[in-house]
Length: 496
Image 1 (cartoon, rainbow, N blue to C red):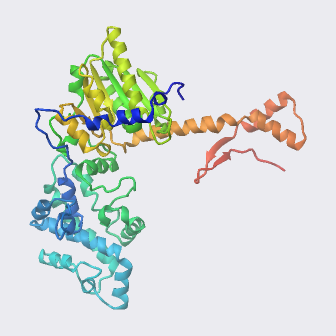
Image 2: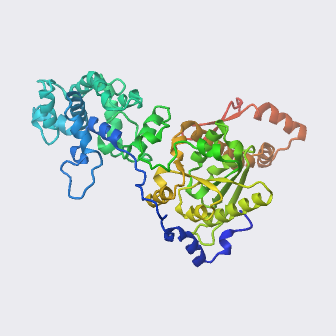
Image 3: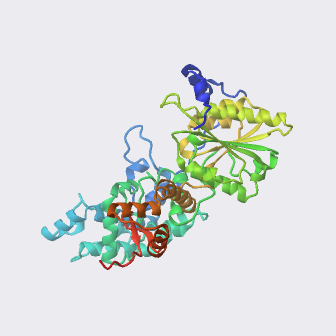
């Protein structure tokens, strides 16, 4: 921990005043306000229709003043198409058959009812619409398991005909894979899928069945296009780049930082470690370096809080970066001093560079915290670029940046938080450090041998200990059981 703390120099009133300063700034004058950037919902509305999300989420039958999750116009458009209706109704049936399997099975075997005679369990309207569209789904003497297989087989020729409803720039195989499970044409394959679905039904989008492995960290994957497509591509070991296609950002937003770097001479990059994702920051620095843009960065200033993520170690270990790491402590546990510390460190860096005749003309602020607005407004000699995250930035901050024509772009465009390779690297580095620092460093084999000799009341000379270690101990290795426990492997065979 640093010996010097910015937070320790400020009383609570002064710190609160600084933290809230941006809220009291006047809006820019003589500029027409523009709408804050919003994520579109066109793609998720189309996917929601096809997988059978309930009508009410499109605004049908909604309660007063309820905002629909999906576009009603999309529903009306797709509902006019026979192929889209078939896919939707088949998916609705599959969800109900899997969700209510036991109850339907009981009705069919104990009360001898077919699935069209139990409206409380199976959507009869879906069956009727399928019939009018040329698919006679209900048949006599059909087992429930076979009906679920029928859904898969009926979907096969009709899902491809719905590709026309999605833009050409979307990778269609990723969408298509949501409708078909492995071995979906078999009872066993559908049983396995049903088991997975019912174990974590609440994690599926609106509890509608899709071929998906849900992760509770994802939340509602159909919240909007900007959330859905990066997750969809990630699940297919790919990366979705062009976030401009799924957002309605204003003119101040940038799709790429290369224009900013083209105008810059010397850049300082200031990172608010408390309000930035370490993996995303590492990812964007790697991306900028790959594009040969990091050469203009005079310094990367990391300002961290003692309570934030240890993942920042992965970036600090890179000796090739012009990096300064500054750690703040807290006077009170509930109050951080990162924003004040970063502002002061930033001004000192700019002033020092000017005094040395190497002025900083451009700066990148990596933070979604609006408290850095005063720093931007009160440093007109520096051109700013703000890097934000969709989920962590307030609408008011979007508005302020747009109204004042401060360029910004979204880190999510360069790096998705689910990037498997970078996540793996960061986690692996931390695991290795944890093992080496907290476990292996405490294990000394000579000490182990000496404790064993003392316990057994035996003695060995130093040459005997060295020979014993080389012959019997060093040949062993450490492995890990399935539960994560360490186990000795290649142990010498004992005779007694």
